[in-house]
Image 1 (cartoon, one colour):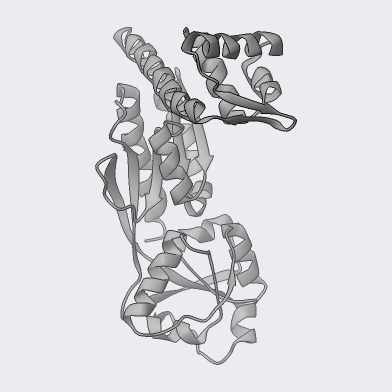
Image 2 (tube, rainbow, N blue to C red):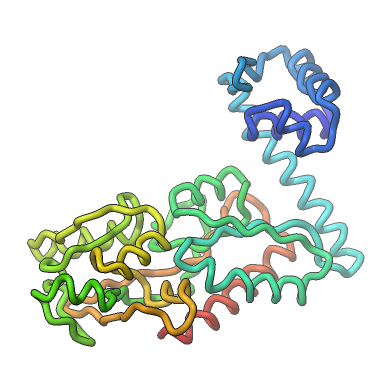
Length: 306
């Protein structure tokens, strides 16, 4: 068993296709197939079921995929630490960003990364909390910005910012729904009278909204569930409802943006933004540097909306 065989198997398993994996690795498909077959013969297991649409993992294949990712991760860490001995922070860092923050921090984070770590590589992935937590556990992500993440033994969590969600409206939504006068500061109970456009569960903002309304023995008027930040904001802009999100989501529009924010109180909807990484995977000096960098960039970007 060698690293080429393990890398070949992991890439085929992740992409679900020998053809796509061969293209991604820049390797002839017959050679890729031979690597995987040699692995199966040596370990006396079948790891992949071949079918007309690609491949699927066997039970043994799922076990090997988890170990294979860990082995490749350890090799990458060794290379990074050897590079650090030469005095250069290098290697590859993958960071998960939630849709609400990606537009605000992706560019400044990339600029800061290239300035401080010219010998390292960066991958930014946009996604929702639950899939990103799984990616942290599997090693596909080194760290991620997540909302309201519960503490667990396998995750290291660093609180970056506590924020109050706001009501987001537009002139069109206010004109279509004049029953509730919109004010700069509004009681949370008033939202029950407004048509809300919210993400579906288990989105962390949706869970927070539902929990607070339950405590008030009140039911929110949810008229639409949309799992896409830009789509929610576009629908609000067109007057089809209102949204409850962090204030910096308005960075998705160029100034002057057509949306307005209204503070909520009694109670406020407080959300926590956290920088999370796996506690079970060792961190390199590059990872430590990037975690500090992410915290700096995020706090600076959010400050304009506090």
